[in-house]
Length: 493
Image 1 (cartoon, one colour):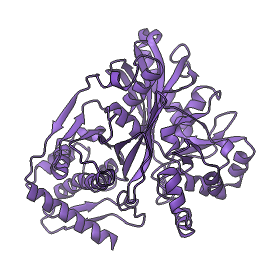
Image 2 (cartoon, rainbow, N blue to C red; image 1 turned 90 degrees about the vertical axis):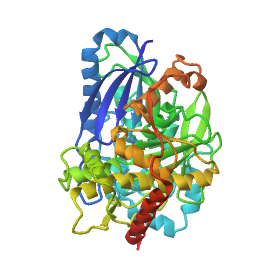
Image 3 (cartoon, one colour; image 1 turned 180 degrees about the vertical axis):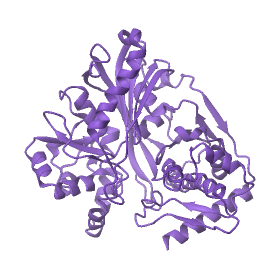
Image 4 (cartoon, one colour; image 1 turned 30 degrees about the vertical axis):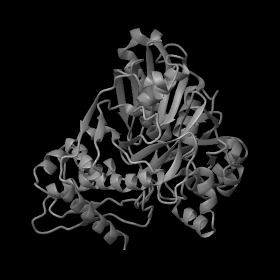
């Protein structure tokens, strides 16, 4: 075994990445897919298209790397975690478009559950808040809106799962229907203490337990696949993790108190809290970080709905920029932010506010404001949201942080990385491996396949990073943060 083929099924694209066992990228391919917005606040993907794109990406890599096929030891999977799909058990064909984590159609159900007093019980069992970000309420909505789908699930003709479980089922020709504990822990249906689906929660959300996937370890095996014939032979599927936990794993944040932030469409901040689940009294949620070598590890998570999505809004909706990279040039062209703040509450605010009714606003515009001020405000909003969430998480954990690790496409934006370090007042260690989530799944697969004995071996790998130390004086940084808090207060009025 010299190589691991990893699938990264994200919100905007599906990638296939061929890694060698040291974590180096050998080759990669990416196939994008459109977002579907049937109504304001609703977001969907064509799950059949996602599977087809998975096969296309695998084929593109293998067409170029045919000579390495015999040395591929396994295929690993990482995925957008809270997106789910209902599909036919026999054919694997979706019965409805996949409902994406950004979708808010479960808001009314969540509000009703909170009024009925279910918040504490659900928080205690799952570590999560009642929020439409997580799939359970949206599954219930779908079953209420589509009686034929409800009947198909109840009779066993259909299955429901997150994207990893759907891909496993399709890639194995229906022989395996399984998810890993990191993805299961994001559904509002999973007891993170007993590490199993909770029958009471499934009843509350009207989800048949028998329609849910088997839950396996993150470094476990999930059947075999030939990648639709592209690999040329069957290889084990080994190493499955939700994308944010996979990046925490690839950062080698293996000790309690180590943390990372992924700069994606949204952002997930994860802080390792050790081998026992801890519950927050504030806006922080608790999740399974991974189960590797039969050892469960837990994490606090701060969830930010819109980071890269904010930059996409500048480009696609406002047409202020033609390319996301322009934001760095525009921001660097200003000596300060001119008092302009963008609060990107397009789908509400996540941690630590958890206000689904908040809506986006640009605060502080004057006649002298330009598109550069708006672009800079968009970048700055990412740093401020990270600070809000991380401050809350660190206080709950009782662990001061000496650094935070970063990954995702936006780590290439040097203005953003420096500004995050400036407002956090700690170094940002930015990964130079763009494909960190699929690398995390691949490393879990390498442990599962016996290439590495455990986490201590993985910690020795040399993966490139760039460190950004705080450079702004503390008083100026504090003034920027206070301006942000004032803008958020105005949005939350």
